[in-house]
Length: 448
Image 1 (cartoon, rainbow, N blue to C red):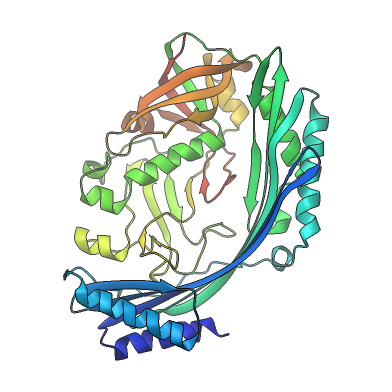
Image 2: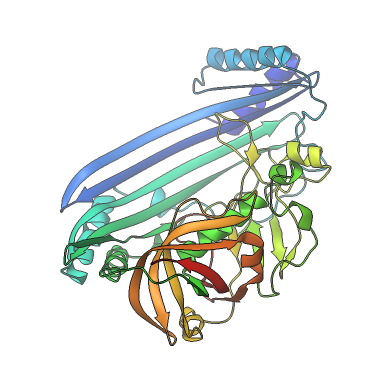
C-alpha cells in the first residue's frame, strides 16, 4: 500500500467535505522484545500497529479523529467524524496548519533505517539478553539475581500530507539492550543498570559489555551510607546529567514560557551560564534516535540552540503555540497518530567539553559523584530541585566509598551558573536526550 498517497486522498476527501484545511498523519510500526531471567525466557512479544489521525479546520474550528481501519469505508467514517467534531467545536482564530512560510526545504537527516535491525531474527534478541545476563554474573559473584535483562527492536514508518502542501514519509529502526542486576553483601542489596539504544545494530554496545557494566554499577554501591550535610562540588555522570538536560527542556517549552510558567521565561537573551555550556535540540543529528526530516506537522526539523555558549537564545515551539507567542515554529511538534501535536524535543543534548570525566573528578578535593537521582528533578516553574541521590564520594580527586540516603538540592538558574566544567564523554545512552559528565561548583548535599 502506498501510504503517502493514502494520506493525500484522506486530505482531499476532508477538503471536499468542507474543511478549509486538513492534515493526515499516518504511522505503521512493528516491535518485538524479549525479557530473560535466571537463564530462562520470561517474556517474548511481537506486535504490529498502524493508524491514521486526521486534523481539520472548519471556520476556525478544530476537529480531530483517528482510526486503525484503512478500508475505504473506515477512512470515510474518520474524515466525516473529524469534520463533524470541528463543526461542533468553539472557534479560535489561532487554529490552523503550518503554511508555506513554515513548510520550507527539509534538511539532510542521513540514513535512518538499518536493514540489519529490520531483519533481526528472534533468536538474536534471546541470545543477546542471555549473554548480557551471563556476562553480568561472571563479572562479580556478589550479583545474586537480575531484576530483568531485555532486548528489543522497533521498525517504524511515518507519512504526512496536508492541504497546505506538506507531504512526505520516512522509515526508521531502533534496537536496544538493558540489564538490571541485583548485588548483595552483608545483608545489603543494591541494584544497578546499564543500557544502550541505537538506530543501527553495528552501533549497539555488545551484550557482554552491557552486562558487565551493569554489574559494576551495582556492586560499587555495596556498603553505601549517607554523608553529613554540606555544600560541596557535585559531579553528575552522563545518565544523571541527561535528566538535568531534560529538566531544562521542560523550562524551554514555548507554551510554558508563553504562560509564564517557566523559570526561563524572563531571561531570553541573557547569559545564564559560562561559554562552555551549549544546549541544543537537533532534529537533524546524524544517526540520532529522534532524527526525522519533518515534525508532527510536516515542518522541517532543524538545529535549535536553547543555550548558546551560556546565553539563553531560544525556546521550542509547535505551530499553534508559535502563533500564540507571535514566534515561529521550531519544528518541534511531537505526536502519534492518535493525538494532536504538542511541543516535544528531538535529539536534545548538552554539547561536550574538552576534559575527560577522570580530569573533572581529579580536580575535586571533596565532593559527590552522582550516579542516580531519585525523584522528579527540578521544577520547571520554580526552578527548585531537591532529589534523593546515590553515588560515590570524592576525596582528594579520587572516588572512595559509595553514598546513598542523601538529597542533592539547588536551583535551576544557580545550577547553570555553577556548571564549571563539561566532560568530553557525550552519550545518548537511554534515548534521544544526551549529555556528558557535568560538574557543578557547589550544591547542597543533605545527609546524616
